[in-house]
Image (tube, rainbow, N blue to C red):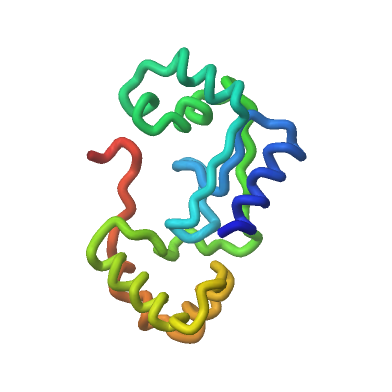
Length: 143
């Protein structure tokens, strides 16, 4: 995950934007697995959102204020060349937790595995990941 965080922070700095993320809601796509979301912003953008955001979901989630209105802020999306956006590596449900427990059991002898190691595991042992594949990811508007 640290590599993804570094990648996203570097994108913010290199592209001189207010907000960078490795996922944005539709109509954009996500190319990283669900659960590996990274969002970074400048302090100035965060402060402006704090002062100006009024809609409930903008106050609760903060970041939508930065990307929902085109042109309000400079936004950059970090994308993976290959699309892994349908993979689900988050813990929102009991089924998700079951998958994550299987991943940790597989890597039980080490704590330094990366998302790329999990991706390799997914390719070698896809049955580990089947438990939560039918779950539909909620959006920030779902309660």
